[in-house]
Length: 80
Image (cartoon, rainbow, N blue to C red):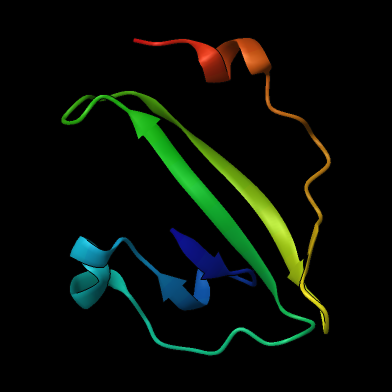
């Protein structure tokens, strides 16, 4: 999932293909915009999980990662 960053989940809101018609919101991705790219990892139908998000600045020539806190490699490699 990707969404703009502001006072709440701003447009554009790019949902998974199967969810886009219900949850997606059209918009433009333009230089100067900050977006959040997020993943939710948890058991389907489960009550617990973790949401990982990276904040990314859209630039004239591409993107710049703004998030500075690294993910814990041991957790990313663990299979449940």
